[in-house]
Image (tube, rainbow over all chains, first blue to last red; front, side, top):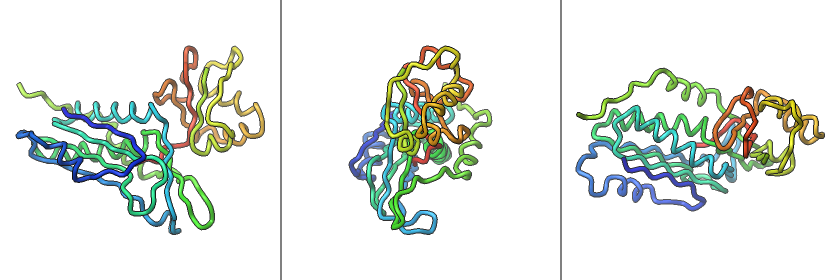
Length: 161
Length: 83
């Protein structure tokens, strides 16, 4: 499986990353991409910017562990996860998860699984700049619930004989 | 051992990392949090609600019951909000 995991301050080209995932491969039949974008509001208030803090070293390791877990659960051919840190303004891309498989079901499920875990287990923290000052974004109960549904015994795929 | 703090835990403690040598008897992450909270006002503020504090030992998530013996790096942070 082709795995790309990057944490970076710089913007990146989503289309180029997706193209790289499938370049030269005849076995990929499905690519699902999730792109997370910085909204212009948080909690009903406009925001000027979002700053993402992360735990270098652990963030990469935690993402890699979940990519590995996804590859055990679904027959994936490639995964790309790129997560930005630093200060972002509304409209900028925060995160890309792209999953490639022969068929769509595995690609859809793995992309959703990875995003649910990124939200609740990857060591990143968002701070937003509002007119009233800077505030840390609180964790959302809905994100925990979304991640917990994957904790049931996973349907492990059988490697092709 | 080295302690790391992130996000509002870092802001409240007033530093991003430090070396500490906790006394014998501080055996778990939960006990370490309780010990830290007694070190001063800034620590008391950072750790006023231990239930919301998340911890990692050597870059892996752990629970409050985890033993700290042998840990090189322990990090404390709020619930994560990435993605």
